[in-house]
Image 1 (cartoon, rainbow, N blue to C red):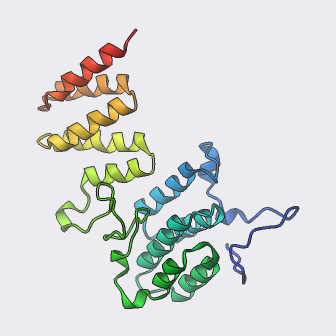
Image 2 (image 1 turned 90 degrees about the vertical axis):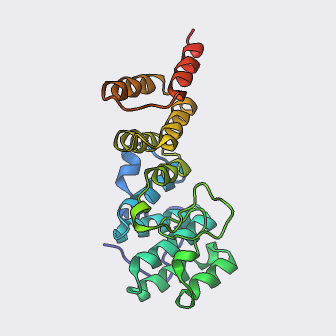
Amino acid sequence: MAVFHSNLFADAPLGTTPESSFWLDGELAGFGYDPAADQALAVLSVKVHRKPQDLTAHLRRIHSCYRNRHSAALYAALLDLSIALQGKGEALRRRMLNASRLRLEPRDFQVLSALDRHDPKKLGNRYSILASGVRGSSELLALRQAPAETSHDPLALANDFIEYSQLDQAIDVLENAVGLQPQRADLQLALLELYRSTASHERFRNAWRTFSDLAVPLVGEWQSVADYFDRQLP
């Protein structure tokens, strides 16, 4: 159980006992991720995306952003926590915000301090998971407000994984989506681009064979990618 104190995220001085394991995600070490690396933050962010009501995932993500002095991601993590709490747990939200103040941009701290005056879902940045609006210029990877029937669009979900360098997961999402929605050429083109950019030759060949066996109508670019991989072979 977490032990809260006045300086919730205070950096431990040299020679002190390591921080409580509550703040550390055991799976990061299991997969060889350095807690200070961007990939570790990506894993924690994906966990929040998958289970928005998991309070522990939110707190570990906030802690990681604070420890690694990632101001923009810290703002997003605190905003996502506020959205997930849905007006509840105000004492916890305020405590986390005040503890994080020194690592936030002044304007971001002001925005988070006055969320009761705004719709928090419209205050996100490129690192936000639960916000539908984005205070930035990235349109491709932004989490946008969408009608209920398209809120789980596979291309948007794949873009979320791509943003956090989770390319294998993005390929998984698109492969499943192509089988379920073969009429969508945009899904096939996004999948083919991932195969090329990750040099996933064998995975491409297996998918092409599987889709062909299932009589999935494929766009002409599949042959182009096959030709591309053939040219790469010695």
